[in-house]
Image (tube, rainbow, N blue to C red; front, side):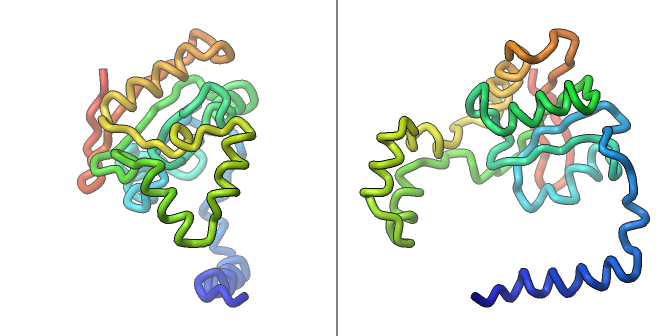
Length: 184
């Protein structure tokens, strides 16, 4: 299988390593600001988010997923935050959603049609449901960004494995300007 973009990236990487481009990024695994940021995987935030927050490589653990959500108390985002607290010394957590998020108004119905069009069978989807996965919930987005941030902050701050001295605050970042607005 030919992967034009991945092959280009591999070639770039060879040059990057040979020219020691990595040296300016050297740090250790511990976030120097004792901060974790849970945010969306939106491409507009790749460089904007750390720049708008004044974060440099090594300052914070940045955890990204579709929507910047904790969708259940034991999902991978929550697991990453627990590891960040107990293994990496994180003391503060920022939940940072953003304006014009694609996860807003996302629905399983849309995904279902796209999956079927790309070859996923209804039989496969039924098998997944029989395993206890509610695809409607799992692939559902949110209707209101502010409410979503509040819910995620609440899920993290009341989690039975999160110590009560961990600070958890929620924000919405403007995906064009980088302006932060705190969600109270």
